[in-house]
Amino acid sequence: ESKRPLVVVTRKLPDVIETRMMELFDARLSPDDTPMSQAELVEAVRTADVLVPTVTDRIDRTVIEAAGPQLRLIASFGTGVDHIDLKAARDRHITVTNTPGVLTEDTADMTMALILGVARRLAEGERLVRSGQWKGWGPTTMLGSRIWGKSLGILGMGRIGGAVARRARAFGMSIHYHNRRRVHPDVEAELGATYWPSLDQMLARTDVISINCPHTPATFHLLSERRLKLLRPGAFIVNTSRGEVIDETALTRMLSKGEIAGAGLDVFEHEPAVNPKLLRLDNVVLLPHMGSATLEGRIDMGEKVIVNVRTFIDGHTPPDRVIETLL
Ligand code: 8YV
Figure 1 (cartoon, protein in one colour):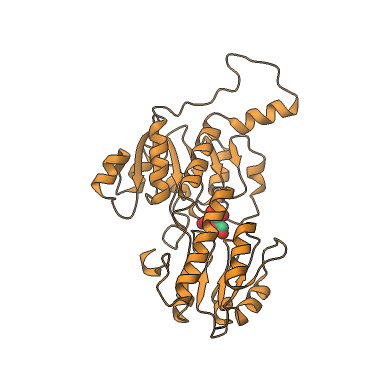
Figure 2 (cartoon, rainbow, N blue to C red; figure 1 turned 30 degrees about the horizontal axis):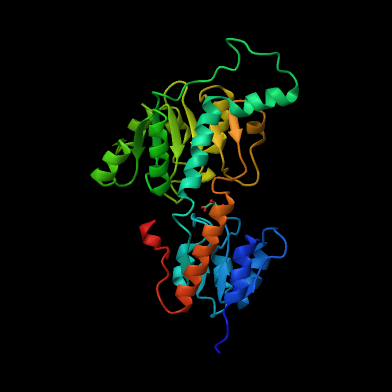
């Protein structure tokens, strides 16, 4: 019998996934759920045949260059791959895979939750009730803004952007999007979405902007102070993608000054650190990166990781291979 591959997993995964991994591989699982340090990652890649990192692991050039020659696959547990230096991996002929598709609907649900949460002041209302300060119903208390009839600008029309568009349409919003490429006309028609080749022009007619693009060098701080200023009066922003796409310092300043009406943020520029000034604002809903955090989704992600690893080990191209130049 050939030697089973040593698969090192950096974080605690759902039990069913860990059990399956132990059946299939020489799996080194994470006993506790603390993120690995760079030193621990370097140590892991010296002997691992396959590394299964998550979004909390910076797989930078240092880590990749420390890998022993046996490391051939990085099978990431997650869709975003901005934590992995893909060029360094390519230089070492290491294949990278991710888990797209299975967290699309969950992340789109969370995007809607944030849109509704900000517009209808959900977290603020909840805080009011819990504080014991609620004085009873009043015709002008806790007024939010209606999302029906408002325009939603989707930045990044991939799988998640499309799932957000379908939902938002059912809530009576008009759908606009900006993307590097225009999507197929049939898809556009199905989503009822209007394409804006110019992000600036889209922002100028947007009431709610949703970030659904990956973080790449091209999208870093794409929503700069200058661009945020283009939004319509009363506009707000939601982000379930990556914090780096927004200039968080500028956003915080503008929220404080009321230049942006609100924000629903599931992701931050320096997670788990959150700008302390954001914590003091009432017009923001802040979540701890839980856009895809459903039990079902995590199991689906784990199953995808297993399929990628098994396919690769059997000598075939894994289904979710990340091609760096396509990002
Ligand atoms: C995951 C995410 O929680 O998949 C992503 O890109 O940001 C999250 O949905 C994370 O990646 C798990 O590693």
